[in-house]
Amino acid sequence: MAGSLLRLHFHDCFVQGCDASLLLKTIPGVMEGEHEALPNLNSVRGFEVVDAIKAALEQECPGIVSCADILALAARDSVAVSGGPSYPVQLGRRDSLTANRELANKNLPGFNFNVTDLVAGFANVGLSTRDMVALSGGHSIGKARCNTFAARLTPDPQDPTALSSYYSSSLQQQCPAGAASDALVDLDVTTPIQFDNAYYSNLLTNRGLLHSDQVLYSTPGATRDLVSLYAQSNSAFAKDFVAAMLKMGRITPLTGSEGQVRNQCGYVNA
Image (cartoon, rainbow, N blue to C red):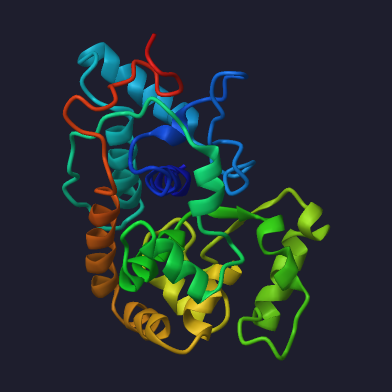
């Protein structure tokens, strides 16, 4: 679940800040949850793990630890137990009273984004190009469904982002029905459960699973230079990843008396 828990924090912070709005369930006629936003639909998971963490915390210290802080801590721990860097997480976030499906559809980066789209999407929440490339390294762990990269399985020799032929053949075997295949495929073909810089090395040889991964190297400019740097130096990647995670974790949090500390992460308190 490491990649999934890391992704929950990311998808939460990009929509009205790091406030656990992503965790709120849809209540017909009352609230439209973000689960069903297109970038999240049949994609985000791990909610039951967060609920179990919250239940344990409520037994020990009821009403103290917010769901938003749980997401930040679980993301850090997921990286650390996968062999990546550990880092001190800033705490004190509060939980929102609302979700925003419309904003989720608008703000969350797509798997078919190009570099211009990615840079603009991250800048929209105050993150730099360097932050974006470093945070993309979160794809060092986790999986993606066949439909997110099925269009890439038809090779186009004129496309600089095209998958290498050997890698493409392997993916076709894992997704025999193309987009209709329900399989989950490792985002990092080299070290899929190890958090390291192999994700960037894969991009150098056109083994970036998603279009939004491969464009980071295939597009000349700042993102290519950063990919090359991180592919050469795991320590440089780890340093920038931690800095970007801490910066992302500070996107418009609710603090003080704003919002609340939910008793259950899926519901606003009665």
